[in-house]
Structures are given as C-alpha cells and as structure tokens.
Length: 245
Image 1: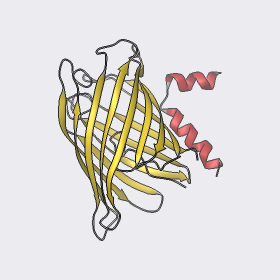
Image 2: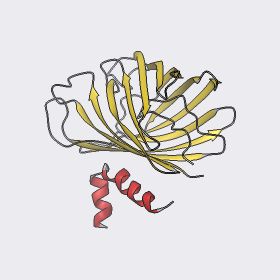
Image 3: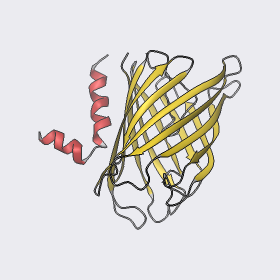
C-alpha cells in the first residue's frame, strides 16, 4: 500500500512506472495529440487507447507553487476517420480538486497521403462536477498538418476557441495553436506545441516522444506559460499512451 500511496501523492511517477513495466512486455498507431494539443492523427476504427498524463512542478515560485496533476484519458476509434474520448481533469495536489469530465470528438475530414496533408475539426465538452466555476464549457478547434517535402518534419497549424470561464475567468479565449514533430530516429521524436494567449492553456511545451514498444509511447516535456514565465509559471509534462488492441 505504501507504493500506491506514493503514486497518489506523486502522480508524475505513474507514467514512468508504467513505461518500465511495458519494457518488460512485448503496432504503435497514430498519436492523437502532440503533447496536449490535438494532432491531425486519428485512432483507427475499432482501436482503443488509454493515456496517462502527469504535470508537476517541484519548487515554489511567485506565479505557480509546486503541484502534481494527474489526468487519465480513454480514446476510441470509430467509423469515417472519427475518434471519441473521455478525460478526467482536476486531480491536483495540493488544493481542492476541480473534478471535470471532458468528452472529446475529432474528425479528420481530409487526408492526402501523396501530398502528406490532413485537416481535422474537433470539440471538447467540459462538464464540471466539483468546485464548479461554470456549468458547461467547450474547446473548439480546427487544424491542418503538412509533412515537409523531402523530410520527415511535420508541421501543424490551427485555431481554437474556449468558451467563457474554461481557461480564463469571466472571459472566452480564441487564438492559434501550432505544432512541430521531428523524428530523430525510429524510436525518438522531438516535438513542440504552442497555444497563443495569456490564459491557463496558453503555453509552449517542448520535449521528446519515445516508442517504448509496439503499443506504447512515452513523452517527457517542459511547459512554459505565455504569462508570467519569469515569475515561475512553468512545469514538467509527462505522459504514457498505450494502444490496447
């Protein structure tokens, strides 16, 4: 029980622990996000994926005190290049949990393998359950990607809209979202994503994604907020994505 309690209070350790287990176990499909930002990839029809995301800060600073935050997610590939998912947000220590269920849907309505381009549209529906600041919220986005000719470099460009109170108190927010994925070798990819704007999701994350085995991808990055970064508004990002079938 002591080990389980350690993961409860330090959820950032869980993706690392699961990665080590998977290395002992023995088809990575498309990743549904770059880090937290949606990519143009879609989970294939009939496939099921799970994702464990942990964000954490190790020291106290003016803009953001030390914390740990754990987010589980389940994704399902359905017909006609559509995927749906469910996230559970708000498990943050220390402090009061702001438990929120997030239902997501993403549709890749265009893909050209010859030109290596794709377009997606999606929406996340936020349903707060505890310590509510709003009743329902939405994150709507459109995005396109292109693999540059003669390279494996993938660029993603899009726009977003958050409804009132989801990422900013008493305000809606809109802006751009951008991504870069650059394979280094068959197992390791450098990745970066940026959401514009000064709000709780406006930040830059850079890091690496590593194929643990044929079913799992582990990510390790660092997030720097657009607002008050010098005062300490930055933190670590880790995740583990597993394809179950």
